[in-house]
Length: 151
Figure 1 (cartoon, rainbow, N blue to C red):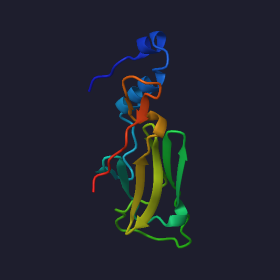
Figure 2 (figure 1 turned 180 degrees about the horizontal axis):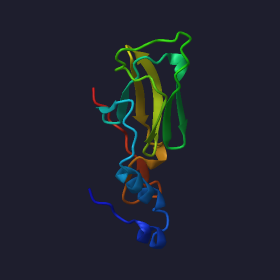
Figure 3 (figure 1 turned 180 degrees about the vertical axis):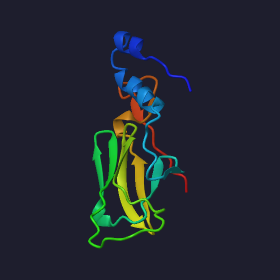
Figure 4 (figure 1 turned 45 degrees about the vertical axis):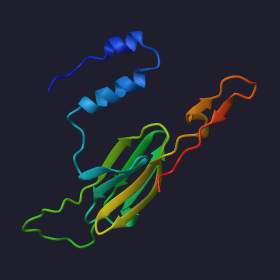
């Protein structure tokens, strides 16, 4: 895989440093692969992250959002019983998974069901950023387009 040097972009472009950082992060090969997860497009502006967290209890999972970052943390509590495994195929290690959210994407809900953590996200575009229709002539010439919802 090729790697690209974005340092010229940092030197000459102002305000695009976040975009360059996203490219840098996407190129890294040390991205965590545990726990496995899916990202699903549910509807036009609705998404779902499904994460396999077998063996984790609700109390051992923490979901945080800060600005455009979603962080999911799993901290396994110590087992009181000392167990001797002949084969240990279920990973029960701590994890921290981070997702970069696009503008106006918000976490709506989270549910833990049958070892799968489902996180529902929605993109809510502010009214001021929605398309507007400009009428020709007259003093009152700006009208906000009515959003049509599919049945």
